[in-house]
Every structure is written in structure tokens, then in C-alpha cells.
Length: 319
Ligand code: F6P
Image 1 (cartoon, helix red, strand yellow):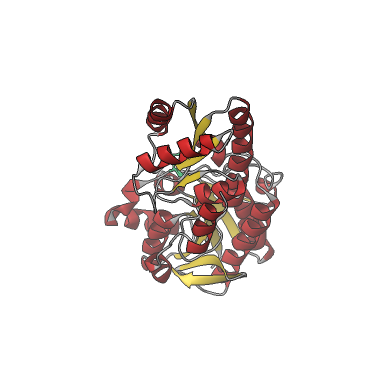
Image 2 (spheres, helix red, strand yellow; image 1 turned 90 degrees about the horizontal axis):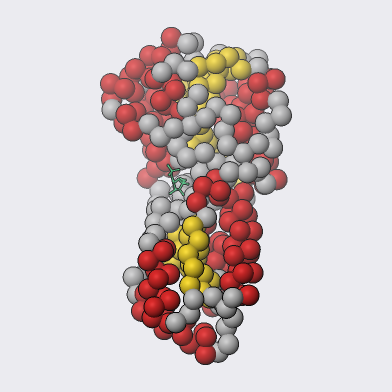
């Protein structure tokens, strides 16, 4: 490859800037040109493409969000739109692309690879819901942000002897909820992958907890289960325990990345460029069993992610 394009796609995640920076600097170190594609695949189609040099990424490693901005581009699922995307790459001399995003973004990357553009995916999502990798850019920061926020809610919940339903992000994936559930010592963790809809059982446990002298009752609820406000009202009505719902929302997606997110994102960005320079395409960078590795995109997309059973079981035992 001669010119490497880089884009971020899907929900932003802290550490994406570290990955972009690593792509730019590693590509330059290898004598390649770099172009930044703004706003994901939507920006590619709109030809929002900028030249990048070493200074384009100065002072960005500690910043949250993505300097290239991002978008969810449903249109890019259509074959003729993908062909247009590949054509635009060729027009701008882009013969390799690093796509930083989640599974949906990798599907687009796979299509571009088929159309002759060398593509490498880098896993970027706060949700940790990419099966081929044990690490995704942004999860560490997001889960730490959520954990700190939940600690604060817990303080006031204890003072008022309340029950708190705290909703964390994750429409389809309960990793943030599971990790916070353990890290915050919550009484209940509700995960989309495991939810049994037995709210009466939760109510029973709250009443029992109160009898045993529990001063608060923290329920961490994943966004995919939702209805946090209604659940809080139902609990208060059934138990007589004052209950509040707190939806943490997009604060979990922002903020300066943790050290881990900066270092892993930097490694993955550089690794993606190395793959392109070795003539590889249609690969996803992953962190598996303590090592940085890469997989064929098809193979990666076919993998199934499941909630680690041991973690889930201890989350219940440690209450
Ligand atoms: O994929 C990241 C994520 O933050 C999910 O946890 C959440 O369900 C979704 O994005 C929210 O998307 P949006 O920012 O488009 O509302």
C-alpha cells in the first residue's frame, strides 16, 4: 500500500484518538501517506477526506471522542453504495483503510476488501461486544467512568436508605453492567443476555434485604433491558422502599481514556498499519489470550460472544 486511509465508525469510544494517532504515525514511519476520512462511511461517501501528517494527531492521545468524528451509516449496507465507496477510495489514491469500530463497521470493511481496497478492522466500542477479541477500545475507560458514577449514587442511596436502579450503556451487551456489578458490589445485575423478567423475585429479595438491615439496594440495569424509571416505581410501590432511577447515558462514552485504552489502542493502530504494509487485507486486529493477533474478518464475524459464566456466577455469589 502507498496511501492509508483511516476512519472511525459507529459509536465513538475513548481511545479512538490514540488508535488514529498510532495509524498516522506508524504509517508515516513506514514511508506511507495518510488520509483521514471524516464521519465514518458517511464521510467517505461525501468525500470528507483530509491529508494527515504527524502534527494532525498532536495532542490527541489524551482526548476522548474521535477527532475524525463518526457516524452510523446504514446506507453502506447496499452493494451500489459500497461500490461507490471503493471508487472514492481509488479516486483519492487510498489503497488501504483502517476501520476503527464495531462489528457493523467491519462488515463494511469486508465489502471494501472484496472490492479491492485493502482493509483492516480495529475493534473500537465501549460495549466489549466483539467476539474475536477480549479487549475493545473504550471499554476500560467507560467501565471506570460508570464505576465511579455508581459509587457516587451509592453514597446518597445509603444515606437515604434507598434502592437505586442505575442504568448503564449496552443495548445488546451486558459487559459494562456485569463489570460494574462486580466492581460496585451491586445487589442485582440485569444483563440483556441473561434477563429472566422475574421482577417479583427482585422485589422479594429487596424486602428480605431490608429485613436483614441492608441500607441500600443497588440494581445495575443494562440499557438493553431499559424501563429503569418504571422498574423503580414498581419496586417502590411493592416494597415501600424509596427508589430512584439514574440513567448514566452518554457520559460513559466520553472522557480522557485510561492508560490501558491509550496503550492498547496505540498498539492496535500500529499493528493494523503493519498488516497493511505486509500486504494483508480483510483482517481484524484482536487481543486474545494475552496477545495481539489478527483474524480474517469473515471468521471474526462468525464468532459468538457469550457472557463469561464464571464472572456471572460470582457476581451473584458475592452479593
Ligand atoms: O455501541 C455503543 C453504545 O454506546 C451502546 O452501549 C448504546 O446502546 C449505543 O451505543 C447508543 O447509541 P447512540 O449514541 O446512537 O444513542
